Length: 304
Image (cartoon, rainbow, N blue to C red):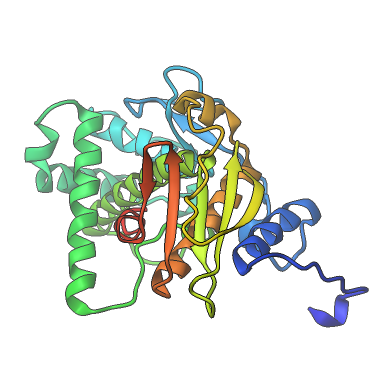
């Protein structure tokens, strides 16, 4: 990569967190070939209807679930909902449950897998509204997997950050794998929906954190409409500034999103994970009366 560099320029920032945010924006602006995860790659944000029955590009009623970074997962949710209602997916010639046509299971195997999924989750699927049942299944499965990771003391992450970049592997489909794929989609979708809410929260917030080697030196960075704005070093005992846009509605915040804002706040989330993992003091102020401390932030980050 360095052999292809024509020039190198440096910029001084107040912290590593700010440098990470600038890097994300520069990748969007310059579209370098080796930063695949943060390039546009023909991605576009979309929103799902509350009942998961449709997907649209703009957050207008009833499309209030999201944003999602691509159509793949919300379209897969639509397919699962259709299958649960008795719809036929086997005759489709286009993508099914987020799979490209050449990777879709044999129609018989697909139908048997759907029936196996229904049988496994029959209690949830016969309780309440269908879209709520699907999200309930995803949440329960996520909790079970999280508990399994905790018990095994594994460092594996349930993050959905890289899910869009995974290649479709060639393997032999069977009903059990189809049912497992459907369960995985619900787990992934639930996490992405929780993440969307979290990013809406960060869009109008002030992030404060301490320097690695000087514990009494604290930074504060104010976000407005998803963009980093005022930066300051907090004096001893000074409170975290109230974000000026904290009273903006959730509907207004959803309308402010574009792909650059989504990825910028996703990078911010990664940086917050790093600070929490390093046992740094960190705080997020979201309103005059609400400031999240490091313990609460750590608990929330486990869900997104």
